[in-house]
Amino acid sequence: MQHNLQDTISLLARTPAALNALLRDLSETWTLRNEGGETWSAFDIVGHLIHGERTDWMPRARMILQFGEARTFEPFDRWGQERESKGKSLAQLLDEFGRLRSENLNELRGLNLRPQDLEKRGRHPALGVVTLSQLLATWAAHDLTHLHQISRVMAHQYREAVGPWTKFLGVLQCAGHSSP
Amino acid sequence: MQHNLQDTISLLARTPAALNALLRDLSETWTLRNEGGETWSAFDIVGHLIHGERTDWMPRARMILQFGEARTFEPFDRWGQERESKGKSLAQLLDEFGRLRSENLNELRGLNLRPQDLEKRGRHPALGVVTLSQLLATWAAHDLTHLHQISRVMAHQYREAVGPWTKFLGVLQCAGHSSP
Image (cartoon, rainbow over all chains, first blue to last red; front, side, top):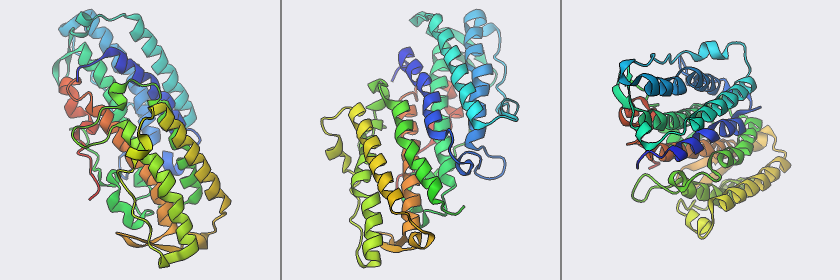
């Protein structure tokens, strides 16, 4: 399937409300526990999404439009959410994610991107040449990868509680597929 | 982590709103496409959740409380959503899921289950003896397994569109972990 900008925007617009409906006022059993060790809780993941809104998606889109391949994106700090989340409640993070996403989508819509704009190229520090179209599709797929992760982290909390049903529950077989 | 009935209910109560926020009025590109072959789309998965509300969770809970291990649960029809979904829109399915879940949780709350009730045992046609506690924990984890699946099925639609980012997106490495 080809990338469709309207489909991307419509998904990106829904993620904050979906996470809000799932997580707001849910007990900390579900939202603050992780999968052990240095893994992330749902709380950490919302912080990571906020950090992406600030430093990754639209800054990179602007860089492609202004500088093309001449300037390499800043590397994304995958632990940047510690700064975003410190001292905040999950409710505050959900509000902040919703506000930043809304501002970023307003900016994106205001760019009135044409098909030829979507083919413009930029330079990723690890992946090399990428297009604006690929960047925006990845923004949407990145929401889905973290929804996938949140459902897995939460299900992990009931790994023992489900007893013999564990073998019928796909999410409990998921090893996490961490990026390299 | 032990099973906690209030945590289970609070998660179960949120899933319909979370799916509604994610899926309602989203383009059919995201909601009707599957992962190929006989796999399920987001639309199919919501139908499956409806079928579970009607035939699986509360009927089995009632059977444990009334008959214990003396009567074996009806096998769950994992293709039962075809009957539930036929001729309906996704918006209708989301409404129906919300209504049925709400009715089922009202019934569950009305049972005023005590800790000793949660230890009552029933008989699963494939798994053998299970407890009411395990059944209710599985109801919640089953929501999460399908949220995990929905995020994966949707991300699959952008497998090509993300270009070289595919290797950084865990959800695109997920093979599905189908139950046996």
